[in-house]
Amino acid sequence: MALRLDVLSGSEQLRWASFGSDKRRQVFFAGRMLARWVLARRLGLPAAEAPALSLEIDALGRSSFPAWPDLGLSISHSGEGIACAAASGAVGIDIEDLSRPRDFLALAAQVHSSQQCLQLAAQAEDARAESFYRCWTLKEAWLKRQGLGLDLTRMRGLEIEAVDGPASAASLVLNSSQQRWILALEGQELSEGALDLCLLSPGMSGLSALSFRLIESAAAGAAD
Image (cartoon, rainbow, N blue to C red; front, side):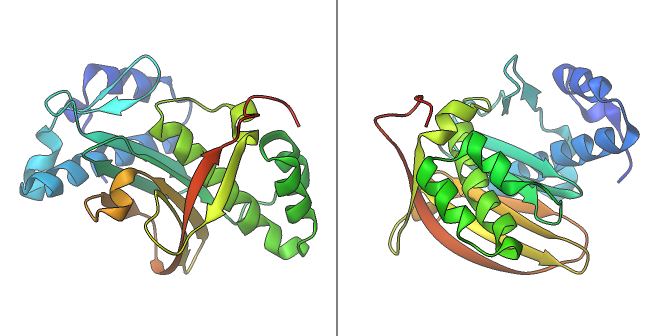
């Protein structure tokens, strides 16, 4: 993707310049273009008109389209995977690379409840990445939908409940010939069929999805 910095707004150019590597800048630029394509599709505009759509970043790092202030927008990056969602109301999205080796039990102690940590520890080691990131992405998408930044304490107070019917959150595993990602969406429009989602990644093939809702416990904010 050719980098045309002239299509970026002033706030986007400042963020682009803050990254220390060309790869980070390229991924950031691709995410901004993806967001414009999502809006163009939602408005029924030709893809060729997408770069001209204005997109801003506020002081808290939240993205929005000034000409459409009621449109919810969320963008996420992980490795070479980029995801973007737009909706008529608030929306959150998070994508993570499942192939990264991590100490998932140690990480879970920082962001998951005691019960979630016990469930993770009881699983086979090769199943922990997907389980950990399913919880993580659902929680981060929930925070983004609330307009909040990453809050580890609040994440520990979020419980996740699987549902069969209408859901405000969904978790998807994305497969490609090169990588596996897990993605989570949070937004009321999931049950209304009115949410626009775009993914950009090399060699993506199949996916599987599960639906959830997130409940903030009364003890949210208290350490376990």
